[in-house]
Image (tube, helix red, strand yellow):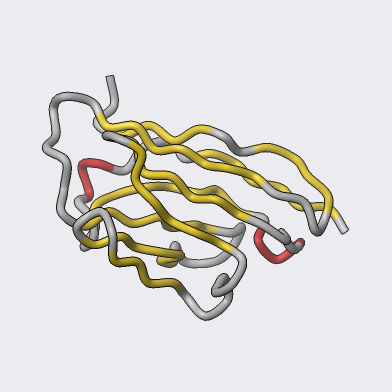
Length: 113
């Protein structure tokens, strides 16, 4: 079982919402800081949002006001509202800073215009 597993991606139209979930196996501790990242085709992986101590969040400018990161038990949630075509990417969760051994398969988010 992968240490972290992402789910909840899909194909949606612009303006719609998705809720991503990141579940942690028992093999890793619940880190004090978790992050959601994304990688679009041909681009570098980038940080989307992070959650410190389960309560303090910060966001990349390109998602502020639209995305919300939160914790639900051992899961880290990314609520994505008002999605845009430029949000199309594979989304990953990891600790922050990221631990290279924790990268999972990610979940594909595709937003059509």
